[in-house]
Amino acid sequence: MSYQNLPVSAVGRGIVRTLRQQEELPLLRDHLLRLDHESRHDRFHGFMDDSFIERYAEKCANDGTVIIAYLEDGLVRGAAELHPPETSSDLLPEIAFSVEAGLRRHGVGSLLFQKLIEEARAKGYRRLRITTGAQNDAMRALASKFGAHLRFRHGESTGTIDVEEQPRLEPARPAVATPTDAARAIIHFNRAYWKFWLGFYGWKQAV
Image 1 (cartoon, rainbow, N blue to C red):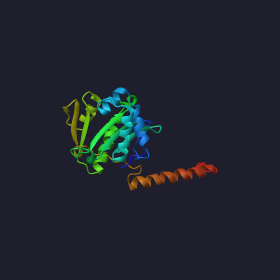
Image 2: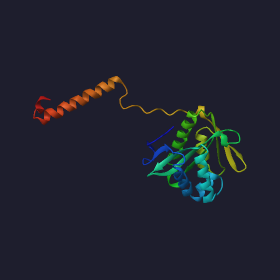
Image 3: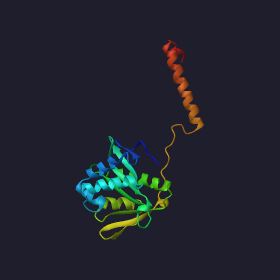
C-alpha cells in the first residue's frame, strides 16, 4: 500500500509514503543516524553506535520490513516500521517508530501509526507486537492511544495491538460527489464560458 504525496496536515510541509526497498535504504539509515542521543536510546532501548544502525537499516531493506516514512524536502524525518512475522520469535509482526526531535508533538507519530495500521490490515495481520523502552513515555502514550496493553519486563515495555479494533480511515471524498453536483458544475462552467466570450466581443449587456 502506498501513501505517495499524502500531506501531513499537522505539520504542513511533509508527505507520507512507503519507502522502496533497497533503492531508498539510505533515507532510513540517514534518518536513524540523525536521531539525537535520547531519541536513539528510546528507539533501540539503549545506545547503539553508527555501525549498528547501518547494519540494522540494511537488514530492514532485505527482510521484507515495510517502512512508512514522513519526509520533508526529500529527507526522512519520521518512520514507522512493520517487520514481518517471520522475524519474530512468536510469529507476530513487530512495529517500531522513530521521529526526529524537532517534529515531536506535531502529530507525525499518530499519523504514521494510522498508516501502519492500514498497511497491517491490508496484509491480513490481526495482531501486532510493540516494544519500547521503559523510559520512552511518548511512545508508551502513543501505543496506549491505539489500544496497546503494555507490560514491563527486563527494562522494556511490550504489548500487542489488535488490528481489527482500530478504526478505519475514511476515504477522501471526491470533488464531485453526485450526478447532481456534476451537472451543477457543468452549468456553472458553461455560464462562465459564455459570459467571458460575450463580454470579450462587447455584448456584456446581453449576459
